[in-house]
Amino acid sequence: MTAAPVERSRLVPPSLILRFSLTALAVLICYQFQWLWLRALTCDWNLRLDALLGVHLHKTAFDTVTYRGAIYRYEIACTMADAFCGALPLIWNLRHSVARNLALIVAFASTLFVFNVVRLSFSDVLFAWGLSWNWAHNVISGVSYFLLWEWILSLGTLRFASKAVQLS
Image 1 (cartoon, rainbow, N blue to C red):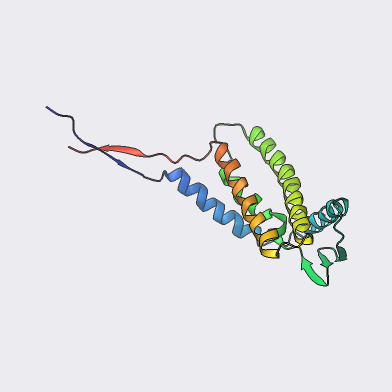
Image 2 (image 1 turned 120 degrees about the vertical axis):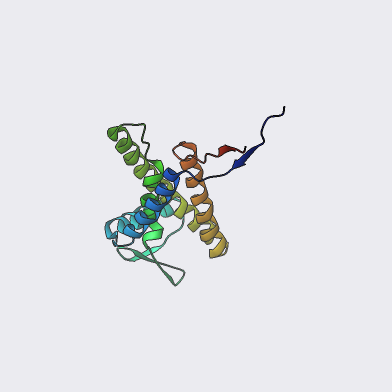
């Protein structure tokens, strides 16, 4: 007598569908706000770090700078507020207390702000050195979002489980 064959199917757990749905909702809600204070703060700290690195942008408004005659405006995506909001349902750990999750979120917000300012300044330096905007800004942004995703995965809050189904 032989054992019945086992088929492995990759079923997406309902909790994962819920987390991704909440992520989409969180990003949609994020874009309902202007985030003026965060755009201004990001602009200020980005300009400060740029100046330390020898790149001198001229601030023309709370969220707008000029560089080599071009105008750049800090939008929501420049602050990574959308990434922050979208990450919240993905990093919340149901096995931890609310206080521990809130502490993680505060640490995440602070670290993401610093990471983002460094990302922007690194892009600005590369652009000032002559790299195209596409490479200096867009590629660096893509790498940054990838690193954020890898960090989220490292937390282990997402379960990509597969179930074994026994056929008779």
